[in-house]
Structure formats: C-alpha cells, structure tokens
Length: 75
Image (cartoon, rainbow, N blue to C red; front, side, top):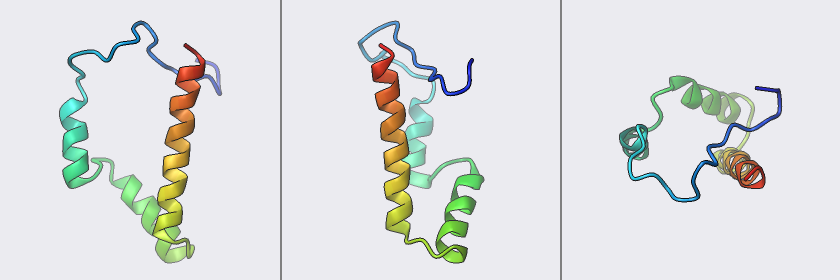
C-alpha cells in the first residue's frame, strides 16, 4: 500500500453482522488496549512531557476522526 493511502473496506455500505475484533473492542472498553505501548506512550506525554491527559485524548479523537473521514472520502 502506498504511503499516505488509507486501507478501508468499502465493499459494502452496511456494517457486517460479525467482526472478528468485536470482543476485543468490548474488552478494550472495560480493560484498556492490549498493546501496552499505548498506555506507556500516553504516560510519557502526560508525566514526562507535561501534556494534560485531556489534551492527549483530544489528539487521539482527532486522529481517529481523520482516519474515519479518509475512509469515507475514499468510498
């Protein structure tokens, strides 16, 4: 895949009835991400670099929103 290109499944406009990541997403909401690097990197930004957690969370939301919009734009 070319750098900067989004990989989005646009084969159907409907949400599939089953997604293999469904349970992992449910677990993530309850227990946090499995990838401990995410928590580690956020901890560095907040505790060592002085960013507020709210600011980091806004950045994450902005990034994920832009990924969704890029997928929508490619439809």
